[in-house]
Image (cartoon, rainbow, N blue to C red; front, side):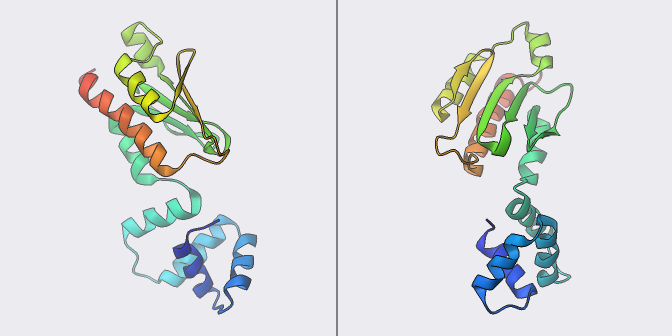
Length: 172
């Protein structure tokens, strides 16, 4: 459920030498309680990068990735809410429940400015290379194992879209 690092720090904060018992307790805690215990074990000196890693490990939220979306003009809907969205965004990454599936489609601003609701050809090639399949006005991917898509796949998807934005639509 949590990374080895998170489990270890929470176990230490619980002052438990019994790893199995600690793992049982951890499973009963909310994510906020896990974070509190993690920070309690870490002490007062925690770096910003360690905080971002902890948030990723506990909540599954990749803050550095979200920050990059702004300059790449990508809207992101994930975990049942808009994580990043601006009126001038060009493309939308829309993930379903549990991040098991992903839709990529043009944002309203792109459609308005380009006069089409089709993704650009250079982006469709990149998405198909990642395993996406075409759907009406976009591309779709569903993780075959039924679990949330891995962070590396999300990063590859954002990198593919970002490359197209930076090379073709940088001054758009």
